[in-house]
Length: 594
Ligand SMILES: Cc1cc2nc3c(=O)[nH]c(=O)nc-3n(C[C@H](O)[C@H](O)[C@H](O)COP(=O)(O)OP(=O)(O)OC[C@H]3O[C@@H](n4cnc5c(N)ncnc54)[C@H](O)[C@@H]3O)c2cc1C
Image (cartoon, rainbow, N blue to C red; front, side):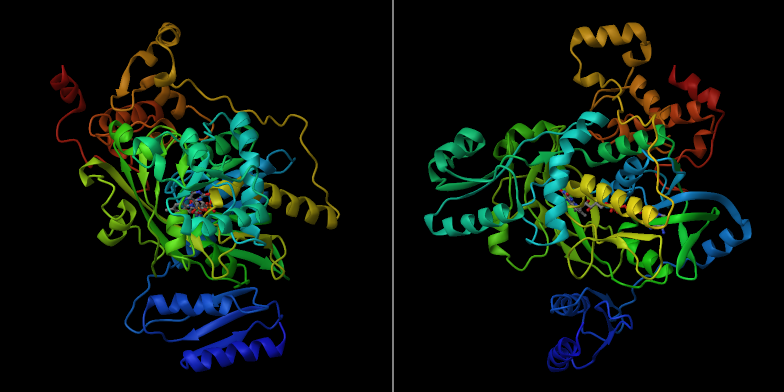
């Protein structure tokens, strides 16, 4: 970055925010560090964005603080002490930090090479971060700013999903997306959106007339909008997935190809020697590694800093989503009966928004989702549903949707950096550390392309360092999906029960999930250890009653199959035990049931 640009930024800051100090990195990469005090959190974020968008700025490390605002900060010191005490417990080629969609996708991609790969995840399962709390939209790639890495990987990733779904046996519905206008005055806005899609290389993007729009989406007519639609923007490549199903499928396939997963394992430090990475310190001991791939979501900036490369700051952007009862889908879901209504209307209203917040879409399983909202929050662990965010997610109240039809809200934090783009590169400071940071939306849609890009970085680096990686001859890209009872015909169900009677015992009545499916999940290549992990794999507990009936049965099955006590079974993370103690002998509980 040249001095002239730096001085220009300093001048802008001095004029508007005199208490803010700016420091440039010594290696002149264009990483700028901000220090000082601000009025409130929104101002912290505003200044971060202001600096990030200046010419030549690669990224922003934002250390601005708000007097009186205590931002909780993860303390890794106990974990470091535990890890150092345990000493070296493993020696691998690659450690992947984080088992979200990014970590699982990369693990599956790298599993084709003769490498020893370990995924370490601080939570109890795959897909517990942003990956479990999103809309499951495989965006076409029209919304990302042209020229960004996000735009490129979104379009590529969207294309690659078809093969992922075929190979890995998860459901992908190519429903298409549509944005429409009911006034001729708004047509130019559709044209702007269309031009951007073309610029980004989105396949099949088209401007269509109102009549064609109504043929594609009969919900428009059902909602009385038929004649009012003047023009629409059609994106046939929009897809829908259940995001946790994708992550589980990737992880299971990676595990079948030799990748290991350690859960409840937090990376607390990254070890480097003479500018090269040599391993990580975790609460389970030290793991030596040639490559460390940082897919730590909202904590990716902290992991990068652990490796001595403080090169971006994640500012969490919270999103609340409400799930409506499936039974209400025919009523409320009419507008997204076939396609997903895109957020063009919202984008027009809120041009400054950094995210695709708001809207209504459905899941492949048929629930209607309302939201997400988008709110900048200082705390990475703030996953509370606040009424303001929920109100935003539910819309302006003119859609007739009742709060009583919500069966669950969930909240995710988008791991956004100040450039509002993905950060995917080998660290120039700590050789062998690959950052996969800033993976906010469309991180799910881009996941296959992110995995490919990281594969390329590792392969190239290994080649350049005289140790080229070799492909396995027995890599198996196919993961066969286990039977899903509710989706079979009556005859198929009968056949299945004949072969294995456990498919005849329905455990989750709302979603029609059988004992056989739960046993399949428990005995899969990435073993689920908690009730929520079973829910993500099978949908047991995802219905109207939210596990009211099936949770005790799932708990019982987990205990039986894993050889544990009932009191040892967690709802999700360690320490979230559902049952605390027996107040009478288990046998008498069984007796009571009879
Ligand atoms: C409300 C909302 C809606 C969204 N909608 C969409 C959408 O429709 N389409 C789309 O494409 N994208 C969407 N996104 C974005 C998408 O969810 C993310 O881009 C994606 O899930 C990021 O995946 P990830 O694996 O990089 O991060 P995460 O899923 O957050 O995974 C990071 C993992 O790292 C682990 N971890 C962190 N620190 C450590 C450590 N020190 N040691 C060990 N493990 C660690 C965490 O526990 C976590 O499991 C949405 C996001 C939100 C919040």
